[in-house]
Image 1 (tube, rainbow, N blue to C red):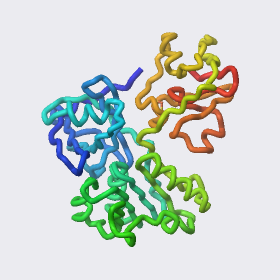
Image 2: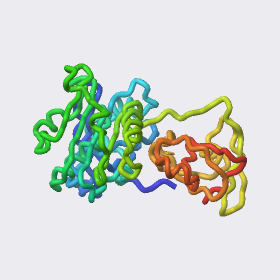
Image 3: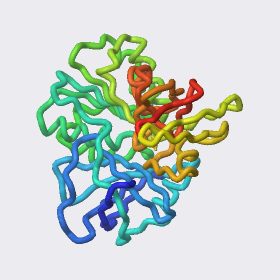
Image 4: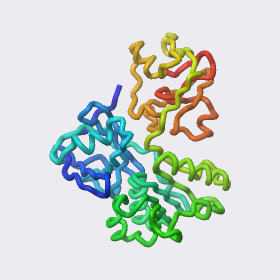
Length: 321
Ligand code: FES
């Protein structure tokens, strides 16, 4: 069952940079919106019937509005195109209440915030929050070019502007992002947050792990990930612990699709293993994790998996449902 939604009106739709629009959402009835914390996102129900997650990028102290930003993605599966072309000022949309799978660790001694492109949205919200609380942090924001850099003016006019290091791919070499130097010498109490395109995040996380950053000091949120499928994928079965019912999952079928075909509804959203909506406990059997949501340690524990994309190494998985 999906959670109840809120009706919001698009109060403003603004071009923030090439191919990036921001949308200011206010409660359709004029009431205050539920509060949120830095790193939170909302599910937005789009006019074409699909649901997409967008991080909130306004000051988390605000409750009169939510601000999201959307990059027009040439490889869009319908989300960014619908937001750009079919959502207009004055429209009313349904959204979820904010959820946070990417929270700040408030007891951190220092925070290192890394944003790649549109991944700036949750990172900017974190910078606002950390600046407000007087916390120690640095933010690195990597984009292709200034005209493709959303919220540049907002950052330059902010109180935390001196803490933000901008890196443009088309800029002089002395301002390029030096990943290895930025991540050198991990320290206890220093937490790293990264959000951006998959290639950027993979590079950051690989470098951090290679330099010895402990997993609990790494925090990340993927926007989208390609769901891996393989010609060698095989069929398996899932058993519902509550009823004992066993359902076959075909070689070319996801677990959520097999369950839906059997009349068992698992809430889903991204269907790419990035949002965590479909997270399900595994009571027996060995999952084959294909998500970008669980940490390597959580995956290794094999007691939960994301059935929208992950499969099974064992012939049977017993699910806590
Ligand atoms: S629906 Fe998003 S992780 Fe499964």
